[in-house]
Image (cartoon, rainbow, N blue to C red; front, side, top):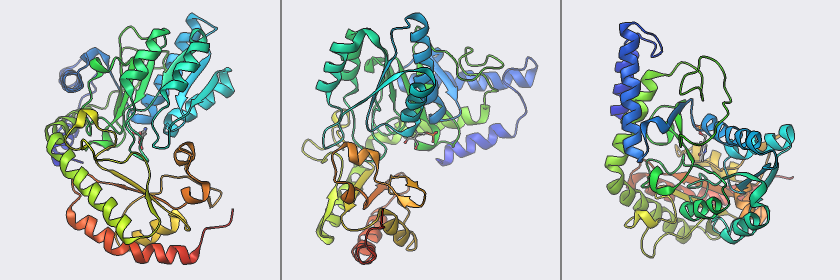
Length: 390
Ligand code: PLP
């Protein structure tokens, strides 16, 4: 957490007061929540009343996908199609799959190109044929595994031509790229505290007031009855302080982190044969210097190393004090290739040797040097162990 966010959280935690209570401490807590909401709206170019606080990104994604679907099918039972990109986080993919199973939704996984960017032609063709029966489109702003930034304004423009609302999971984008909810044209957008220097377990769905949303949680009617449950005042405050600091530091941090990312990628390519960057190639106009046109998240480097298991690489690096991830799930003890890499057309065997490095506020040149000094030997050892049998 950003130290300022941590401090703000602890300060609020010391006080009593349920923001739904009518007594003085309750009203004081409510003031903190509403001031936070106002500030969050201002930071994201949204109206305060559009900010629905949730218990994190997964909850906000569930509310968007299920809530919009239920609302749209209630208005027009023919609208049962749900279009999501094939590279979404499971917090979007799984609610969509659940809707297919439990509610008879027709879920369409929209294809991406080799860099993980949504194929707009496929979206256009899908809408041209089925626009009148589509309930919603959900495309993430930026991908958590390979850092690809999606063409959100183009997606919105296409979907709105057919009267279809658009949700974006912006968990990886908010605090890392310039994000304006109003200019994006989006109907709903998810973000999460722990991806931007705030606490785990708090996030929000930013949703236009005229967007129909059927609640997932029923209860006390908080958050304009869309998300019942006592609002976590301390978390709301910490989320707001974290976003404020992240956006203040963003222009300089994006340049710094893109520099670390590029140094790691160049070093890995030079030191390890068969190291392949996945996701878009940064550079050219320079992601770091043209944030509005960024094609890749500044703090994301994703590489595959053919001939070994990502999990072996991960544990070998972990034993040297380097924390990274594979981005793929392990099912029944057998590592699975990531659905994101497979959607990009990466060979399944190559996709198994995947590693994702994420840089943040505390990352330094020395961290990159430590990874690069460990990597050649670690890859050699993992390759000697070979890929696990499937
Ligand atoms: N969406 C994306 C793109 C993410 O990266 C994550 C977290 O890893 C989530 C959703 C889930 O957010 P949370 O951990 O706040 O539930």
